[in-house]
Structure formats: C-alpha cells, structure tokens
Image (cartoon, rainbow, N blue to C red; front, side, top):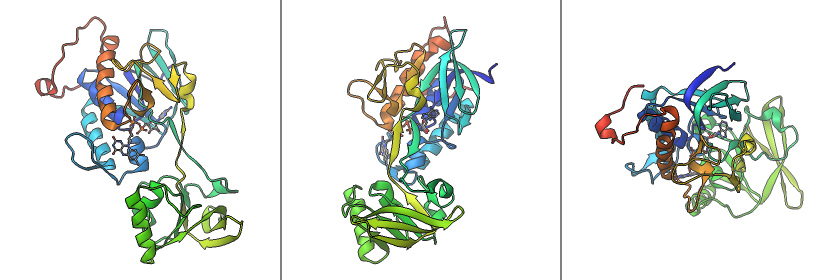
Length: 331
Ligand SMILES: Cc1cc2nc3c(=O)[nH]c(=O)nc-3n(C[C@H](O)[C@H](O)[C@H](O)COP(=O)(O)OP(=O)(O)OC[C@H]3O[C@@H](n4cnc5c(N)ncnc54)[C@H](O)[C@@H]3O)c2cc1C
C-alpha cells in the first residue's frame, strides 16, 4: 500500500530541487519533495544562510536564505508536497512502470519519474571523536547554525579552521584550531586576526578538542590539548564544531545507478541517469565539464522537466512556450 502518488518525486529540497518544482509545475506536473533535513534549502540554508551569493542571474547580491525564500515563493503556486526530515532510502520499479520511493520513516510514494537533487548526498557533520559527545548534541554542541543570534551573550567555543568557523565569530568567543593558519578565505582569516588583536575574541591555537565537561546535556567546559598533550579548560555554554560535512551518497549509492567518484552520471542533454525515468540534477550529477553552481543546476532542472514530460503525459505533444506567453498555470 502506498501513502501517496504523484507525477514527479524530487529527492532533495535544496535550491535546485526547489527550482525543479517550478519547472515541472510549468509543464503541469505535480511534485512531492523529500529532504533528510527538517528544513528546505540544502547547503544554502544549512551551511551559509547569512552569506551573500553574487552569481545568481538577475540578483547582483542575494543572501543564501533569501534565495531559498524566493525559490519557495516561485514553487508555491504548484503546491508541492514536502516530506521533510525524511531520507529516501529506496527507489524501486513499481508495477505500473513508475517508481516506488520509501523513506526512513516509512512514507511510501509512487511517481512516474524521479529527480535526484541530493547535492552532496545525505548531510552529515564530521563529528569530533570525543567521549560523551552525543549527550550534548542539539543542546550545547552544534554542527550547523541557522541564526547566530541564538548564541548572543553565551560563552561559545568554536572549533575548526574553515569558513564556517570564522564566519560565526561574535563576542565572548574562543576559536580553537590545531594550526596557527586558518583554511578560511583570506579576508575572513584577516578579519579573525583583527578581532583577536582588538581583544574581542580569543584564538586558542594550536590546540585541539580533547574532552567535554558538563551536567546532563549542558556543557560547562571544553577541554583542549596542545600538540604535547598539555590540556587547558575553557568555560563554555556552547561548542560549535565546524569540521565540515561528511559527503556520503548515502542510500543513493545502492540504487544501481552509474556513478563516478560519488556523483551520479547523467546524459547532459536530458539529465537522465543510467536508469530510464530517474534523473539527477544539481551538485549530485556529473557529466563532462560540469560546473557545480546553482545556476547550472537551475538549467538542468529545466532540461529534466522537459525530458520527463512524455513520461507523465504520454502521447501529448509538448509545445515549447516561454513563461511570458503562458503565465504561471494553476495545477
Ligand atoms: C560556503 C558555500 C558557499 C557557496 N557559494 C556559492 C555561490 O556563491 N554560488 C553558487 O552557485 N554556489 C555556491 N555554493 C554551492 C551551492 O550551495 C551548491 O551548488 C548548491 O547548494 C547545490 O544545490 P543542490 O540543490 O544541488 O544540493 P544541496 O543544496 O546540497 O541540497 C541537497 C539536499 O538533498 C538532501 N538529500 C540528500 N540525500 C537525500 C536522501 N537520500 N533523501 C532525502 N534528502 C536527501 C540533503 O539533505 C540536502 O538538503 C556554495 C556552497 C558553500 C558550502
């Protein structure tokens, strides 16, 4: 028994998956959209919501979270059904020539076609190897931060040397890094050094995380160790551990699709994978000279929608029309 049936199932509610809802909608195809995260927006929302993006056509500068808001607004007339906080675990042929998707929480959806817009795959943070870490997660240890305001006034230890670590620096912050040099963009690293010189933050380098102390799920101290193993205790309310994302294809690797270095191989003319009826767009897909940019993903979404049309509307000719001519049709 299935819970739902739709025209197109889209795996991934990042910018590219959201735009695919619009492109499918313009061709009168209904969509269900799945994301393992509890929110839409993919990398834009989870990794850099407050950063400006400069290469979205028509927007000289737009914040990543604002771009996601605009994409949701553009998709809304087509009434997509979202299944958030649910990872798609299996995609299999359904008896009628379509596909059956099943999520980790047991939701079952049949669809005529599948679009995989799963970015870097199932999102997972690189966790530091610390005893008792799980008890603090979500309460005082975080890997992704949507709003820096949540941490205002708290004693925050930030660990990691990449852009995320540097970008979230506020006040009463200690930044722990195992090297004196930061991997972040040069201007971010320079800003960090300036804040340290002004005494507004403490750089704890070269140190690495050693242990966590606290009661229940509330952290009281982060213990760090230098290269000789000498430790010191930093009083802290929260630890932001920014060691990057584990890029793991997750269940997608088990679906029998042709893969190349953890990416799904597609025909660049249609975005179709090696499995007819299953398409891949955005960061997850690969073809010669692929550019991993949001704008390439948008174009791939349009190509996939056109290639899917005959699967959803068999025997109906597709007459190419500009949006200016057709408007935004209801669905
Ligand atoms: C710091 C930073 C700055 C960037 N700046 C720019 C920029 O200026 N310009 C630009 O063009 N690009 C930029 N990018 C890259 C851009 O964010 C990506 O190209 C874009 O997010 C790809 O979109 P996507 O929809 O393909 O995938 P994603 O945004 O990765 O979204 C994929 C979604 O799929 C979900 N998913 C994966 N597997 C499953 C599953 N099995 N079931 C359910 N859900 C699943 C994930 O949870 C995720 O939410 C930047 C990236 C970073 C990290």
